Length: 318
Ligand SMILES: Cc1cc2nc3c(=O)[nH]c(=O)nc-3n(C[C@H](O)[C@H](O)[C@H](O)COP(=O)(O)OP(=O)(O)OC[C@H]3O[C@@H](n4cnc5c(N)ncnc54)[C@H](O)[C@@H]3O)c2cc1C
Image 1 (spheres, rainbow, N blue to C red):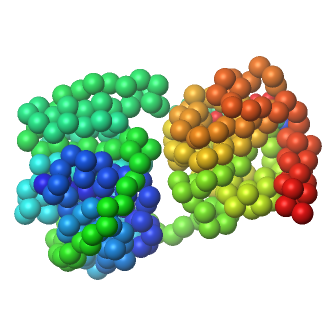
Image 2 (image 1 turned 120 degrees about the vertical axis):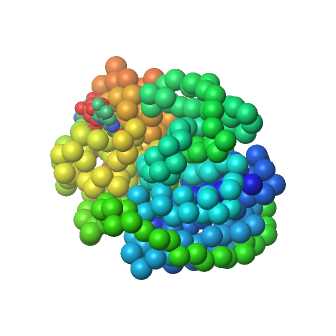
C-alpha cells in the first residue's frame, strides 16, 4: 500500500498532490492518503476521485495551518500504524519539506523530485537534480521508500471513487510546532487563479522597470483569464510577492501560454517555466538567452508591445 501526503492550503488542495496520487495509483492498486489538520477533510471528495481508498485526517488543536515538522510527526505516527511500502508527496517546496521531516524522524533516506519510481528491493528512482538540468538514476536501500514526485512529470487522472475518511489525533512534541505560520503578508494579487493551475501566465522581469510597470501585465493577464508571474529580481526588489515568483526557488508552472516579458532566461528561471506548452518572449535584446526556449518572440520594448497586444485582444473580441 502507498500512502500519499495530500497538501492543502487552508482546505484548498495543491493540484500537484493530485498528480502525486495518480503516480501512486500507477504503482499500486492500494492507495491511501493523509491530510494534515481538520480543514483537510474538505478535500476528501477530490482525493477519492483521484484513486485513494482511505483519507486519514491528522487532527490536533495546533494543526490549523502549515506546520512542517508537525506534518512529519503525523506521518510518522500513521506510518507506524498502517505500515505502507512507500510514502509519496508532491515535489513542491512544501511536499519536499514535510517528507524530509518524516525521513529525519525515521532516520531514512528521502528521494526528492522523482520523475520515475519503481518499488522493489532496492527501490529505483530517477530524480531531477540541478534545477532539472540533470536526471540521476538512484537506488534507495530502505524498506520504506520516502519520495516526492517531480512537478508536472505525471498528468493527474481522475478515476472516480470515494475515500473513506478516518480521523486520528496526532501526539505532538513541543518542538514540532516551532516552525508555524504566524501571519501572511504580500499574498499574490494575481486574482484568484493560482500559478500552478493557471492556463495563461503573463510574467515580468527586471525589464518591467518597477512595481507600477506591472499594471499592464495585470490587465493582459486578466483579459486572458490568467495570472501574473515574475522573476526573482522582481521579488527580491519587493516589486511583487514571492508567491508570484517562477523558478527554481519559486513555483514551477506548466501553463498553455507563458508570456515572458523583460526576463533574460537565467537557468534558475527556466527551471520553473520550461514545462509551459508555448513560451512567448517579449525582450529588447535579440541575444537574450530566453530566446533559446521561445516558441515565438517579439523583439521590442514591453511597455509598447504589451499595450498593443492588449488592444489587439480587445479588438479581436469586439
Ligand atoms: C540559487 C539561486 C536560485 C534562483 N532562483 C530563481 C528563481 O526561482 N526564479 C528566477 O527568476 N530567478 C532565480 N534566480 C536568479 C536568476 O539567476 C536571475 O538573476 C534572474 O532570473 C534574472 O531576472 P530577470 O530576468 O528579471 O533580470 P535580468 O537578468 O536583469 O533580465 C532583464 C531582461 O529584461 C530585458 N529588458 C530590459 N528592458 C526591457 C524592456 N523595456 N522591454 C523588454 N525587455 C526588456 C533585458 O534585455 C533582459 O533580458 C536564482 C539565482 C540563484 C543563484
